[in-house]
Image (tube, rainbow, N blue to C red; front, side, top):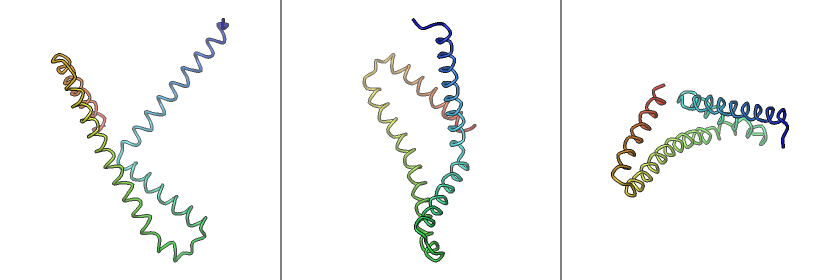
Length: 129
């Protein structure tokens, strides 16, 4: 049997770790929901990659200017991927909902409609805040 003191310490550490994880997730999610912050992070990532490549490959200033359009294209590609991934998630969710709908009883379909409306409202609330 575990002594009470050790159990309390373990439980406290578990609670502290869980609370920290939830807070970190909330802060990160909220930050990434802001399109301006997300765009700045993408730009900083591209700039950092470009600086590291230039330093490690010992690129000359002329070479840096020649390859700059490639990094701008990478930034544009990353943004397109992010946008299409979001649309892909929406389509995958809709597909799953349609297949689930066919398996439900009429009562379950009504509850599923309410659940879907609640989820939409929560999403709208997150997007608007």
